[in-house]
Structures are given as structure tokens and as C-alpha cells.
Length: 305
Image (cartoon, rainbow, N blue to C red; front, side):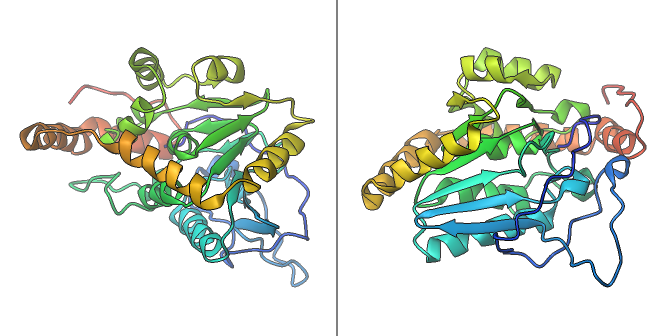
């Protein structure tokens, strides 16, 4: 879920050495306040929504929808999932997911305009975000999130699903469903429970306040905080070091850890109760009000019904 007021991203330089995995142009369905004018000149090539690069055993996925603050639209998420499948076919051993250099917003989170409304679960199993998270978590090699700038809403779940997070001093992390009246799904909460103390998870979810880099490292969100001038070299060196290790051994350790941490037995009646509670929320007037307020760029007036 995108926060209502992260700063607009600065336009980075485009690296022509990288190749585009997606021919989709940048999505324009997110927050209109962040739209950038795009040249329609015949001399302007459409910008890919993500950029991929493979160098040896290292694959890089660069989020490239700068005009929309890398909002997690279905187009971007489908492209990310497809890139991971392509890397798997190429036996890429380590994947880095990043934004453009020195970006102010790493990602503004789930595209609110694409959230289901009415009587449909907005974060169901088939949602493109959920599919992308499963693709990251099941990838047969480490996926490293390299973060510069702010991470909002569903993008926090995305970086938390990566195996490691390397961030610079500009990074912040916020999980923001309460700004929309959105009932976060049980799978997403489990991702947090596997990484963070319950009291800290509650503070993040209840307040939606961004957590700065130093605190994020303290609570175990981040593996390493690295100065922005050194983060690219640090992340590449780490990825290259991991890539020299036995890939089958690394892959099986990752899969074992995924299975062991995902195994949380829940009685059928308990799960049904949770789903019923969530249904009451996403069918509520508050959820409608939260999404409407976001799209209308105003403060929501939640009534608790």
C-alpha cells in the first residue's frame, strides 16, 4: 500500500548497458501527484518498467518506474516475476533487486488503484504482489534487496521477503495498511513474524510510521547499513562472494529455511475466523473511505464501521 505523502523521486541517469526484460512502459495508474511529463517525441524510446542485467552469476533487477515512484503495479510485479523465471533458466546464482541510484523513493508500495474493492479480498492468493513475493522466496538462490530511499506498504513486504537487505543511510521502511483501512493478509503478517519481534511489528502496523535506517538495523530489518557512496560496491562484493559458494548447497539451505519458517499450523476454525474478520474489514465503509481518501488526496475520516 502506498503511503499518502512520500517525496517524489529524482530522475536518475539511464544505464544503456542494461537490458529490459519488459517492453511495458512505466505505469501511470498510481498517485497522480507524482506523475512526470513524458516526451512523446518520435525520437524518445519508451522506458522499460524494470531493467535487468546479468554479469557472470549475478543478476540485477532495477525498478525503473521513476515517474510513479516505482509503485507496485501489476505490470511491474509481473515483469519482476518474469525476470526471476528468466534468471532461474539462466542458472543465475544471486539476484539483486534495487532502484535507480540515489532514488528518494525505492517503492511507494502496492498500486492503490489496482486494489480490489467491494466483496473481494484485496490481497488474495492470486494478487500479483503475492505472486511476486512467492517468486522471491522460492527462487533457488539468495535474493538481495539493495535499498536507497523510502520503502512503503507492500514494498516493505517485498524487501522483507528477500533473503538479505542492504540499505544506505537514506533508507526508511513503513508498513501502511491502516492508512487505507486495509486488512493485511495473514501471509504478510507471517513474513514479519519470521523476522521481527511482535511488539515492534505492532508498532509498525498500528502507527504506519517510517522506521529510519539505524533503527531498522537495530530491529533486524536490515543486514547492513552502508554509506550511499559505498552501497553498490558493498552489495556487488557480497553477491559475488556468495556466488563462489556451492549453488546447490546454498539453494537447499534457503529452501529448508523457507519451509521451516513458513510452517505455522493453524486450526481450520481459527483460519476461518481470521478470514471472516478480514472480510468484515475489506467490506467495511472504512476501507472504502481509506481508498477514496487516498485517490482524492485528502485525509480519511474513519468511523470504525
